[in-house]
Amino acid sequence: MIVLETPRLYLRKLRWDDLDDLVARYSDPEVMIYISGKPYQRQETQAHLQRYLEMEPKYGFSLWAAIYRENGRFIGRCGLIPQEIEGVAEVEIGYMLAKAYWGKGLATEAALAIRNYGFHKLGCSRLISLIDPQNQASMRVAAKIGLRYEKEIYKWQRRIFLFAVQVTNRKENP
Image 1 (cartoon, rainbow, N blue to C red):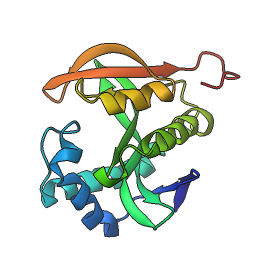
Image 2 (image 1 turned 120 degrees about the vertical axis):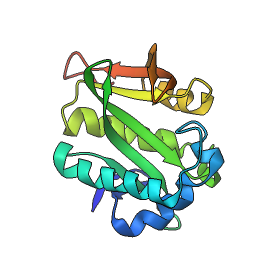
Image 3 (image 1 turned 90 degrees about the horizontal axis):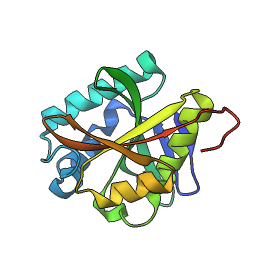
């Protein structure tokens, strides 16, 4: 089921038959360097996919398959993910694409659509992105869609930058 469409992508709910494509992304050390610091094995990826599939009915959102319209290929996963930051429930915009699709503006395109979905469809008043301090590309994506550096936190046993955007007036278009 398609959740969101952009000019070059569509984001659809993940399915079990996406496991091999997800394994290909998660096993790439360059793709995973800023996400986990290391590639995942198949079993770890399977556990993550299980978690994403359970999130959708529980929260009404999750990470979704990013499909490149031009060739119909699964190129990554993007979407919303619940996080707990210093005891506070937050909703994170997450994006991860295959290296071959970096530098084309696709992460920004997806993240903008996801941000708008979170604010306008789900009624979120605040969205965050958790970004490795070395990941300059993700920081540029966050800035382009209106998120600003808020603070440094410690999560997953490492330093993370928290970027956020908040809507205080529902008529605003962040």
